[in-house]
Image (cartoon, rainbow, N blue to C red; front, side, top):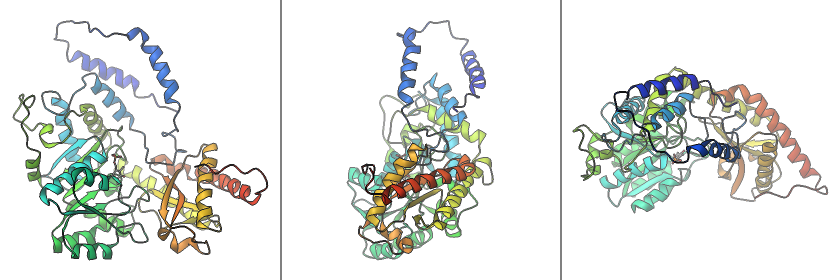
Length: 464
Ligand SMILES: *Cc1c(COP(=O)(O)O)cnc(C)c1O
C-alpha cells in the first residue's frame, strides 16, 4: 500500500549529492547510537501504525492528503544538508528554490511583483497577513464570517486587534447584506474572505466584498488556505468560479501547500500584492544576513528558522506537476470535486439522509434523516463510529440548522445546531471509490437506523 517506487531514484540522487561534496577532505562524523537505529525505527513503526489510514481512499474524513512521493523524497534529500531558509547563510539553494516556488504560486493569481514566502502553515500565514493589516489600519476592526477558521479570532487576540464576526447566509458564505450594514457603521480595517471554509468548503462572495472595498477602503485578506488551488480548476459552479477568478484582487492571500498542494505538514504560504509592506518586517540581525546583499527570506518573515527542506519539496513537486489550468495537478483537484458532487447526489436522492446546499469545492456534510435534529446529531456520531468499523473514515462537524433549513422537511427543530457527518474527498482516487464509499456508508446507515428501531435490544451507548 505504501509506495516505495521512488527509492532507486532517491538513492541515485543521494549519491550524486554526496559526489558534489567530494572535493572536501575525508571525515568521519561522530554520531552516537547508530547501532540502535534499527531497533528505534521498528519501535517508531509500532507507534505510527496507530493511525487512521490517511493515505487510503477510504479515509474520507478530515483534510488529509498524502504528500506527493517527490515531495517526500526531495524533503528527505534536503535533510542531509538541513538548510535553514531564514538567511542565505544557512540556506542558499533552498532560499532560491523557495522564491521560485512561491512565484509560481503567486502566478496562479497573476501576481508578478508581490511579496511572499513559505511558513509553518495556514495559521502562521494568516497571522502575518493580519499583522500587516493591523500595521496599515491600527485599532480598526478585522471582520470574518462566523464560518471563518477560528484562527482569525484567536490571532486578532494575539495581535490585540478588535475582531468581529459577520453572519453567514444559508450557504455558509458571508452574508453580503450583513457585511454591507456592518462596514456602513465604519471602523472596519480588514475583511477576511474565506475561499473555502474548513467545515463546508463554502466560498465567500468575493465580488461583492471587492465592490464594498471600493466604497469603504478596507483591506481584503483572502484566506484560501484550503481552497486556493481551486483557482486552477475548470469544473466549479459559475458563482464560485467567478469568485476564484478575482482572487488576485485581494490585498493578501494565504494558501496552504500542505493542504491541497501535496506537501508534508509545515508548509503554508502568505502573499502580499504590494511588496512595499516588506517595510514592516524590517529589522537588523546581529547574527545573519552577511553572506549576500540579496534578499534573505528572514528579512520578510516573522518566523526565523524555517526548513529549507519544505522549499525543496514544494519546488520539486511543482516541477513534476506545474500549477497550470488543465494540467495533471488541476485535473486531480477536479476529480475530487467530481467525487464530492457524485456522493452528494446519492445522498440528496436518498430519503435516509438530509443534506445542505451542494458542495462548492470537494467537501460535503450530511446527517441521517430522523424525527428531530437532536436525534440526528446522536445518530451522526453513531454513524461515524459504525462506518469506521467498516474501514470508512468520515469526520463529524457541528453546524447551525440554518444551513439545513431548505431540506429539513418535517424534522423537529429542537436544537440550534446539528451534529453531522463531514467528508472531504480531496484525493484524485476518491472519484474511483465513490461507489465503494457509498456502499459502506449505506450499510452502516442501515445498521444504525435498525439499532434505533429496536430500542429494547442493547443499543451501543452514545459515544461522545
Ligand atoms: C486549515 C485552515 C487554516 C489553518 O491552517 P493550518 O495550516 O492548519 O495552520 C486556516 N484557514 C482555513 C480556511 C483553513 O482551512
